[in-house]
Length: 261
Image: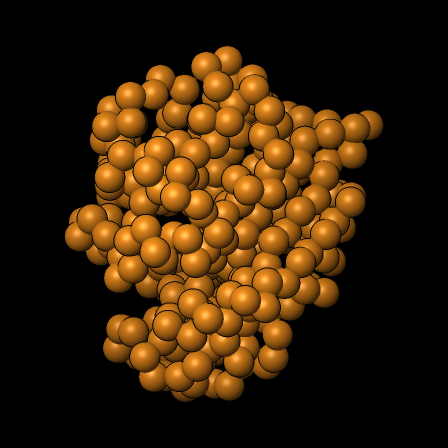
């Protein structure tokens, strides 16, 4: 964890964006997270074929699940990944949607977008592109996407209701959301809630299941299903050297659909 520079005071939206951007800029520049090996990816739900299918440099070991495993992607679909990082999930999605499909990754960190664009060439695909932008203000046209993926990113946003409204806007009627993220299971102590490193580390920004359901409903989604993954406690314990954050958050799959009419 990084030094706590704001102990005792609330973290506003601007500061939250700053600490998140700084963390992921550093990871992009370094070329890896603390745990980007195949064993960690398998703990998150990827199989050996997934890990081997994508060229080195895209899998930065960031995430809390495998959203492509729940997305039921079909050939020819257009897929959008919110907070695409090095592009690992985008390249996996490209395999599923095939040459007639399209995959768009959006990330707010210039260094991540640059790295992901380099990975397009390494992976030899012409159906994946990466755009710089915030997930609260997507650089994507209305009703142009079939499926939205995201992997442990929405919790980082200080404006989660806006994220879900934007997701609803860009999805075509009948389009679906397939997200891996963390949800809060217990109140955060101030030492977690007010710690910028806990925000950037996919902990302190987590919402409860009830809050996520409410935000999705308010955005217009239906068929909402949120499924906590108790086994995620094993890897969440490793996220903080100073405390066991699995006492407060659990990974979950979050699925929803935009009505067809």
